Length: 151
Image 1 (cartoon, rainbow, N blue to C red):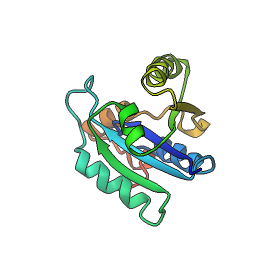
Image 2 (cartoon, rainbow, N blue to C red; image 1 turned 135 degrees about the vertical axis):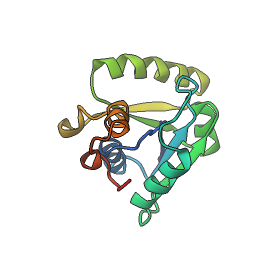
Image 3 (spheres, rainbow, N blue to C red; image 1 turned 120 degrees about the horizontal axis):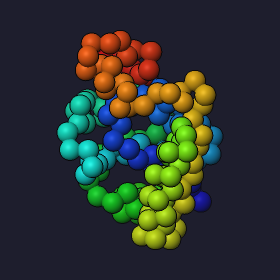
Image 4 (tube, helix red, strand yellow; image 1 turned 60 degrees about the vertical axis):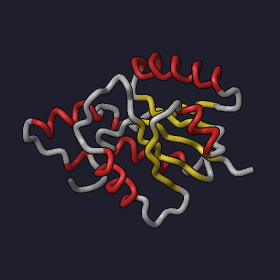
């Protein structure tokens, strides 16, 4: 049976830490679907979704095992549509775990076949977050070292 994983997030922007999680996930799953979601808690995106789709798709253009989709529904519903039984989430710290654990439990309640796999962030990316990258970029700071593509 094909093992498909969804890697959901707002990816505003998609960082080298996210890329690391995707590459490590490919060692565990046959296919990884990077799902860029509309997060109801985040009302205004900094980077347009179309730009992120373009940049992320470009990174994996030669890899048929990675797909990029945009969605505006429950992640558990998206997983059913793509016959994915796994969600992949990266954890930088215990705060991430508390947040992600709650979401994982709800996804499991909504779709009993959906298992969340947590990957601990590689040490060199532990301090990198999309929020910090947005702030640095907003105020003219250089972010190229934190992104796997050029802006």
